Length: 291
Image (cartoon, rainbow, N blue to C red):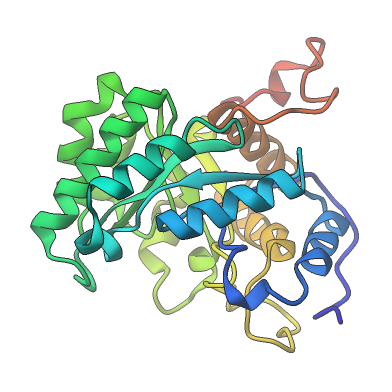
């Protein structure tokens, strides 16, 4: 049963971070994917947060080729469980062509579910795996922007690329990440009138060619979504709603936001692109970084 009738397609989108292995999707994943396609969400990157979840994400990516892709990593919440076996398993997963980024990895000093020294050690270990595999890095950060930036700065010259997933910070954090030439992932946090004010104030400062969009489904349901879904889970089908909010705050068109974020995601994750995106005759205004 569908949660809501999706709105008609207005643009084409890529969701760079959805937790489709979550139990919230275990009974109706195909319907969830159909609803996403119906509103123009063409491709989705499934977030790997542990060895088991990364393995499950990869299996889904193989089940839906050219639509789903995966990351492989261990979330900082689980850093306390890291051992040599985790490292061996992740190294093996990263050799699969459907794995397009190392992570979710990083630091979370908000909840501290794992000791901070362990988080830093595991973050650095996964950066080494990213260097070894040539994959970009999918970074988690909460209340740890200065430390994340310091660790990334020491390795940035060796990394293919990195995105700060679900960025929720302020101007200072944003500037530190942009100085490292990182990508910035924006979720429905930008739709939250309570917690998202700092993000709303700096959203316009993200360069076009550093911006990407994600839902983090089933988490972070946009609070501005109307009507409210019957179920309180977020879905990739709600990504255009995030895009419209970002467009409003940046005073850009929805089509422009969809285009630049799609191009950025294709470049970062090396995703297959359609004929239009490959058209060499496209105008400069159709290219990322141009306004």
